[in-house]
Length: 179
Image (tube, rainbow, N blue to C red):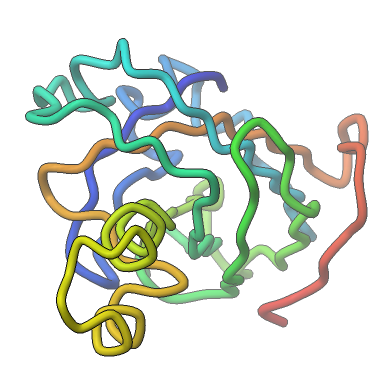
């Protein structure tokens, strides 16, 4: 799924999930059905043309010119959102993350739900603290560096690639976490 644009939110708040057809571009959530593992890869993108996020909300500011994004990815069940195997990772813009391998919750009659939350960027550190736009650089760096949570007015973009144990493998190193 290409060019998924989301607004930042409070820490722990889901910004994208595979059970929302707006977020998946209309892909049926059953496409993510598997009984064992999901393999997920994120490619951060940057493009100043974005005007609205996946929910149709206007991006109030130009897209931040970040170099890296940090995410939390979780595989949950419909019955227990916010619970399940999760993994934190970072990736450079236009570069694929490691392939994240997460176990699928058992005992659900529904496809697993992939959730992305805690989106952070390096823009604030790079363009505010390091450039010297503050009088207290060390305090700024302790708070904003190396990453800072994307705010409610900030839009970030990414591609998401998903494979199951029954589909073609994703290229890259597998990071097994959240077991």
